[in-house]
Amino acid sequence: MNDLEEVASLLAKPEPSEEMAARSRSRLQHRTRGHRRLGRGRVRWFVPGVALVAAGAAAAVVIATGAVTNGGAPAQVIAAAPVSGKEVLLMAAVSAERMPQSSGTYWHVTATWSQSDIPPMESWTSRDGKRWTRNEPGDPPGDVVPTPVSLALKGADVSFADLEKLPTDPEALKAWIVQRKGNPNDMSASEIQGDPTLTLLALITELPVPAEVRSTAFRALAATPGVENRGAVEGGQALRMPDPDGKEKPIELVVDPESARVVRANLLLAGDGGVALTDGYIAVTTDWTDELPETPKGRP
Image (tube, rainbow, N blue to C red):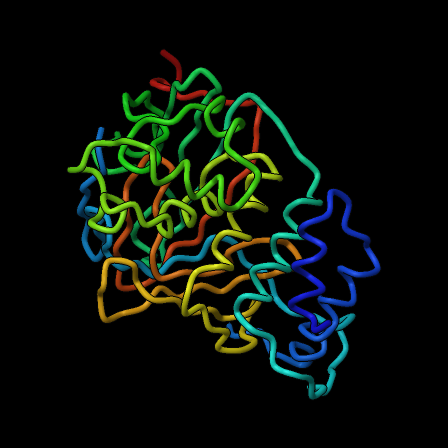
């Protein structure tokens, strides 16, 4: 049984063993040692050098960051067999399922743009669907303000309860996505046709899904035809997959299989249904918090 089959067999079991998961990751660890750190509706926004546009637009995005280390000491690259893109996603699925589930009053998302003159954009979403933002286009600079735009998925509003009840079987999750109805004006051509790729990417980036759902989304993406691993880069493994909307530029992701994070991507479907476009990149972090910042317009 090869490594891919080992990881796939782990995913079919309710309790994958730590020993087996560790063995499946070991080849990636060998290949990345010695790498040096390199320095309502779909929202349509525009700011200088940045655009949030309809689905399918390309964006250079950082979802989370992290450097490959080896105890702080230099290390030589150790040769190992190539690791496929499918294996990377399956390993991320194993890690995602084991991540401890956190909670809080608000789901907090911070987007830091590479353009230094653009302040970080933030959003806070409560479990009843209320949402506040700071520094998004149209917001008073620095103020936290309520917004009518809540979480969205495939052209329609989605609640915390909806996300918590999503299927935890890859085929069932893809079937749910195909059957989901939304506003065609707020979907890309591939979403309208039922392709699950972009919706699955939304589930592993900004949306507050449970660990098992996140794991399932990684597993479903692993079955996407044409997923390639371009090799070890800063923060993880560089993956490439065809754009489901048929554009010449493929979707590119950097995935850290240990933390089950999308480290970078060239396309991002944000939690409010927007799609980001920029010549640079966006650094995005997500967490739970019990505090909504107090500003003059911070609370309704």
